[in-house]
Image (tube, one colour):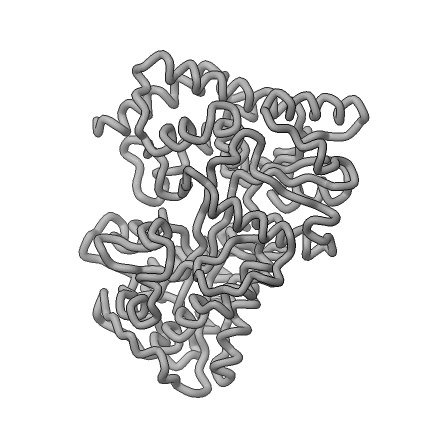
Length: 446
């Protein structure tokens, strides 16, 4: 049944494509800075995994900025038609394999190598270089160097970033927790959790129904809070010597704190996606939620006001670190309408689009020319924390890889093992052994 569903959606997407007047590019790295011209009465297809409340509205804000400038170009949001972000990823992979690309699609920095070296073939680049666009718009000078580094490959830019999401974020329901009650240490955090539990309130919401990636956000946030920002960053960047017993001891202590954290979470996590876990906080069934700050967009879509009904701070103990991911869009090789796709990418990198997008999504803009003077207190506080962080850590590229893994699945190892740990399929000792063994092999090149 599932395969039939995907096939149906693939056929649906292909039918849509029949109504698009195609123009192809045969150059893997064709790169024109000319994004002012436009072909009238055209359509472009976009793919993303943003289908949840808040996410979908933020994506529409990007589209609206583009269509204001190009009213005769229709934007076909294939993901909205499919209805689920994971379905969109599946259909995108099927279409790319069939040499039937959309015009542009969302990707994370860790995906760049996957598409540039398609199926491991360095001569099969499925993306178009955007160097001239970055240069003509001044993004190569204006955007943060850390972000430019993660959207480039071998010295060329391949994706336009639209925002930075902090992932070590602790949300809380202000009707259950006052700002003055927010702890300053992990020990105090667990003391607060024990108090809430005694009052019949689930201290932390968590989800595990869509894989281990949500668990990993909680894990590295607790690890940073427990053992310090620098230890977390060095660990995930592959800079630690895991033959050193002292480092293993610190890792073990962080895992112990993570396991303590799990004792204060909801029992039905295995049935929930990230947004359903966030809903527990909204409903007052849970008090706190450790997650990426895209949850801000979800909460506001339900009518909550940032800084009033809910608030957010860096996870206790991780205040010195801004653990972030980057949202970006790339241009497909052989895009049916490359010119208008470039116009779309130019639009979403603008201050106007990034202002409209990030205030809804809950993320921080990449373009430094965004006017944030009228933003809410939570958004301003997050920007200030980004500015003052002593450790900037991008989760999508600064992560040791499981030996033998492809670029596509290199970073899934710990997430998968965290899910196994959560379900009881492995023990804590087995989890630690897995990390230590794979860490040694990955960082030594064995």
